[in-house]
Structures are given as structure tokens and as C-alpha cells.
Image (cartoon, rainbow, N blue to C red; front, top):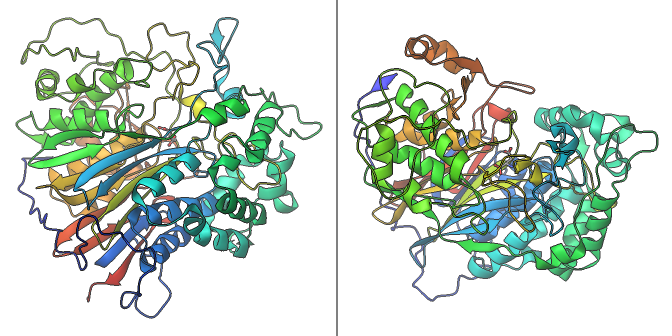
Length: 609
Ligand code: GLU
């Protein structure tokens, strides 16, 4: 596909929502029910919904319903985002949970401003540059994956509390109620849940607490059975009563630390399980942070994303800048812009508390123009060298830079980990929220009696040795992320929100959806459903089979090598969710039609067909 830039009708008028509250007016926590929720009672699992007064899209019907319930009760988008995330901690426990972390981009309608909250996990104080090395070499990656060592200081719960305190209208206790209902009452096991359990069964079996919860009768639960997690229901209830302090310095924190230091390995298991370094003091010191979003102007819109320590905003932003410097944009240009942006991401992005990230340069038009000059009619040689985002740019002069991909860690396979949800409310607030415990199943270790898995987010660090790498571990440092929750404004009003799971493919999925929507003129549902490819400055571009079937010949002729994206169980890239604001208060919520079993989009008041 190679299309000239097309004029996409941009209906950016969203101010005329059903209810607009004047600045300074408190948003009531409970109000009268708005009319008709969803025709004939129970919402159904559908990937696209259009309507008014509030909308949500997640990978999971229970989580979407939880968020919608909060909206219906008068909660705002932030309340609903927390409720949805907590419910995903029940129904998508291998991707989300209070012990993980996440990044949240939020349009605060009252202030007309995009803000972000960083709930990224941190390295414990005892972690050093060589903690993932032994005798001067990196430890085997799979040993790090299932270990106490990889468990970062959890950020998710602190993020929920900060989000509610700053932008919500409900208490943590209220926001957790829908999730408690699902955890206690149970949910129906679907194929994705069973597949993800089965894929993890060998390591789950090696921890007594995990096997007891997720391998009832020694095997993954059957599709169609009801899964209850009373321990997690009790944990959420207690959190509602005691607040986050229970984790960040209290008894729950002590239990997390004890589990990390001495994982409950099954007697007789032969797995090497490295203990972790986390202390209660690390939990006590954890803070979620409000950060300034990244922002790039793109074809008359403003695209807001997550700043470092995520590389999401800077990499999507740089690639968009490169694309709009080009005379034409097709799939070849999409892949090449992504390749270049990844070369820069790998070289320059890390935790800004530890590394001087040249964010301004990376997102500047001058730098993008300089980078765009490298894009020709055929794929550039691999690997692309990073550029110099130093403020001094030369248009279209390529000199021989040393090839340096800037990463000391072999690229790990990117699976379907993580999850992303979007919510908007009747006031026009918008949340785009990426949540993760890193790999599917985190570190595989359930905190005994508490019903949740620990994260293994610290595997996102470069293990080294890799002198100069911005993403080496350090005491208290946050590992670089690829999470890219994104909100697009037009004339200062929300136009679109989008995000995805999938490790480093998150960035390319978000970028490709934006390109599909705004360069190729697809509708948002089509832009999400379209087959994907992911180029991350690697020799071959990973792609879904349908992408290879459709565009393989054309791209191979331009010098690209396409390789099938890894499963398991199905080869697919990302399971995105998005919102588009259609004007006059109408919102379209979009989830996947098939990836990861299909997602769930719901609106408060459906539009008449
Ligand atoms: N740890 C990943 C990141 O922050 C997210 C998990 C994943 O999708 O692999 O980029």
C-alpha cells in the first residue's frame, strides 16, 4: 500500500457533551442514573459501540462492565479507569494487577489539559548495574523471568490512589467495589485465560501459592468454568479499608517482601529461583508521579503520549514527525520511520531521574527532518544508526555515522503481555491507561493467601554489560517501558485515544493505528482490525500472517524482510483499544474484533441505529 496523504474528515467537536460542568464544580460521586444503559439490560461483548454520555473499551467484558457501572453511578473517567484496571487484575491477572505498574494519560476536561501519571515499578535500593549479571555476563533471561530478582517495587496501587486523589471523585474503596464483586462472585473462563494459564503451567506448578490458585486440580481451569478468587476479593476489601499504606509500609508489604526474598518454591522443584532484593523501605519510598506528557503536532492535531521512563511517547512522536516530513506515506515509510525512531529510543531513552534524555531534540521537527532524509525508495541497511538530537540539524545530508544500536540486550520476544483500556465520561474526560505486570503471568509467583501475582518488570532493564546504555539497572531506577497510551486533540478537544499491549510492539501498534487512521483514511475500527507489522530497528520486520499475505510481495520488492510474529498461541501483534470522538457528544469505543479473543466496547447511552 502506498497512498498519498488523504484528507480525513476530522470531526473534532466534542464540547457539546450532554452535561458540561462549570469549572470548580465538584463532580458528584453518585447522581441520578442517566437514561437507558444498553438495550435490553445486559451489555454484550462487542468490539465497537457508539453512543453518548460515556464509553469504555477493554480486552474484557467484565472489566468494561465494571468501568461502565462506575460511569453510570456518576463516577468520572478516572474513577472508571481505576475500577476497570482493578477488575482486569481479576479477569486478566496475568497482565494486570495491583502489584504491577502502568502509565496513564488523561484529558482533564475541567482544566482542558492532558496530564499523565507514572506508576512504573522501581528497582530496589539494593539493585546495581550488575545485579542481572554473574561473573561479568548476563544471567539467562528465563532465569530472570521467574524470580524474586525481577520483581519491581509495585507502582500500580500508588498510581490508583494518586489518580483518584488528583482527578477522581470516588474513594479507593468505592472504585474497588466492582472488582471485588467479580473476584468473589467469579467470572467465566474464556479461551484466552485458559491459554495463558496453560502457557504458564510449568512454572506456576513450581510455586505452591500459584499452583493452588491457578492450577486447581493440577491443571488450567476449563473454558466455560467459573473462576473465583476469594483471596483477591479479601485483599481488595482490606485495601479499601486500610488504603495503599497497607502495601507501602504495612503488613501486606511485609508479605510481598517475604515472598520476593523467599519465593514459595514447591518441594522437589528443580528450577533455579533467584531471590529478590526488595525491602519494606523500598515500598515505603515508592511514589507514583505526575509527569508532563510528550506532545507533537501532527497533521493539524496534537498527539499526547507518555514521557520517559516510557519510550512510548517519544518514539511514537518521533516517528510521526518523520512521517509528516515525507512527501508521501505508505507502509514502506511507516516501517522506515519506526526503524529510525527505535534506533534513537534504544540509544537515548531511560529513566529521566538517572539519564539525561534529549527529549526536546527527539521530538523536534528539525531532528525529524534530518532523520527523514535517510528514508529512500528501498529499506535502509540494518541496523540504522541513532541520530544526534542535539539541536543542530542538517537537512538531507547523510554522513557515515558509526553503527550503534545502543542496546546491550538481545531483543526479547514480544508477546501479548500487558493490557490497555480507554474510558471517557459525560464531562468529556478521557483516560488512556496501560497496565502491566510485564510478562504474561509476571514472575509466576502469587503472594500466598493474597490472590495476586508479582510483576517481573525489572526484566525490562538492559542486563549488560553494556557501558553507556541508558537502561541499565540502578538503585531506585525505573526500567524503560514501551507503553504508549495516547490521546489526540484537535483544536484543544479530544479527537481520539488509543493504546495497546505487546512489549515494544506497543509503540508500532499505536503508530500503525494512527497511520491507518490519518494517512490511509481508515475508520478507527478498521485501523485497529487491520493486519499489523512491527519494525523496531531489527533485520526483519515482524508481521502478522495476514499482513504478509497482503503486503509481503510489495514490501519485499522494496528490500524489506518480513517474518511471522511470534505467538503463543496465535501469531498476533497487540490487542488495542481506542475511542474516537465523532462530534456532538457522540463517541465510538473500539476494541479488537478477534485478537486475544476479541475485546469489549460499551457506551452508556447507545446511539440509535
Ligand atoms: N514491560 C513492558 C513495557 O513496559 C510491558 C509489558 C509487555 O507488554 O511486554 O514496555
